[in-house]
Amino acid sequence: MAEKIKLYDTSKCTGCRACQLACKQWNALPAGQTYNTGTYQNPPDLQSNTWMLIRFQEMSNGNGDVKWLFRKDACMHCTDAACIKVCPSGALFRTKYGSVALDRDKCIGCKECISACPFDVPRYDPVTDKIAKCDLCFSRIDRGMEPACVKACPTGALSFGDKDEMIARAHARVKELGGDANVYGDQFVGGTHMLYVLTEKPDVYDELPERPRVPLTVIAWKDWFKPLTLLAAGGVLAGSFIHYLTHGPKDTSGDDQAGGEGGE
Amino acid sequence: MIPKKGMIKSTDAFERLVHWWLAITCIILILTGLGMMFHSFNFLGTPLGGLKNLKLVHNFTGLLFAPALFFAILIWWREAGVFKMPEDLEWIKVAGGYLWHVDDVPETGKYNPGQKAFFLAVAIFGILMVVSGLIMWFPLSLPNGLVQWMYPLHALGMLAIFPFVLVHIYLGTIGVPGSARAIFTGYVTRSWAEKQCPGWLKEMEAEGKLEIYGEEKEEAAHG
Image (cartoon, rainbow over all chains, first blue to last red; front, side):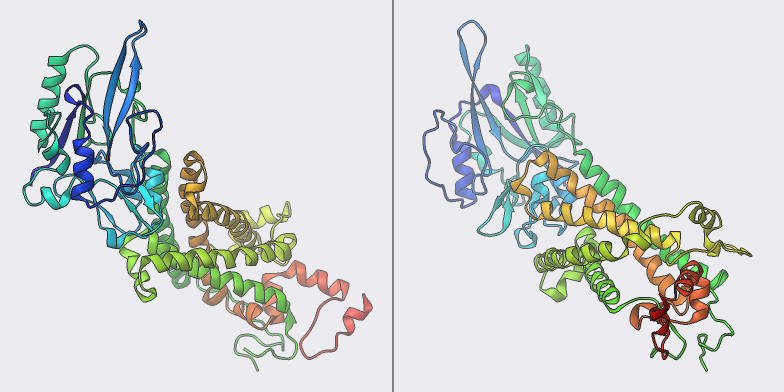
């Protein structure tokens, strides 16, 4: 099965949030009480029942003009997914489409993925003691449908398709846009399965890491210390056995009447 | 394993209690830890009703491990936590005679440098395990920049302690026969003590502090 990519073109996004609502609807996620924080961005951040949201950002270009930037924030579905690497139960897993899905039954609520994610995506739900995040609508794409957010998008800002095709489309669009436009996602963490076409440089956007990577702490933990532990424990077990056979146990018996091993 | 007349007392009841308290919690922590560390060991959670319960057992056992570690450090750091130079260095140079034949192994006190290294590893990394483990239990209440480091540190502690524990078990049982009784009954044979802790034996005898099974504690009175 070919890997799939969801492409998000910020230049076509109008911030209508049809995708945000469609996500809630398909995944049966209840909405909480909202309140005005002085921005259309609502809720203020991702939540255990808000797996994607449109970030609203006002950008001043210095001469009095204000530009509105929208960014669809959700799981990026990394190829080198730090969350899968750290998940102790195998609840987070890679699907055949390249996306990162969650088997909720297996999740033990350890929150290790929250700490590992370079995009700060997984959210913890204290009621169920499990984490939650976008799974690229696995229940839909596995039946040949596009994700709910893509389906709902009225402007063509979202599209979904085969990996190579979407990457090519993203780069073609960036060429068309010119200026600071760039493709965000195919150059790091092994390539993400949500791809952005950004109209501004990545550092302009709120909460968007410029160079996301699997944290060094995760690499030290899972790629160094974990295999070393197995190696050391195995080595010590084998070494002890060989030691016993070749060097032999230490002779601590004596001829004193206090009794050697055999005793009187 | 009942002590025989003439055997020498090497550990008191509190030491033995703390040892087993620490040992049992440590083994439970290692097993439950392995269950979360490797997917292939996830099955260790099955008898407990799943990985979630395994994690709970791990966390609460950690709370029991902490006081055991505290007492262990308190009672053993003088004897096992400080290297004595140059004797210990000489012992290290010949690996205590454990790896190749050595005619005259340098005398050690109650604990040899290998045992001291084990004590220090458990003490230092044990504290690290307790601290990092507690933070990992409540990761959302602290800045992620700090929390992130707790996971590799916890794994480093496992790397340091687990293989060492295996060596400790080997040498405490079949590797050095007669050792296990020191931590079960508290009494060892004189020949064992002469080979394992000659320096300590001489010192205790010189000071008349040696307690011998089946004999009155008259030596103690001389002191």
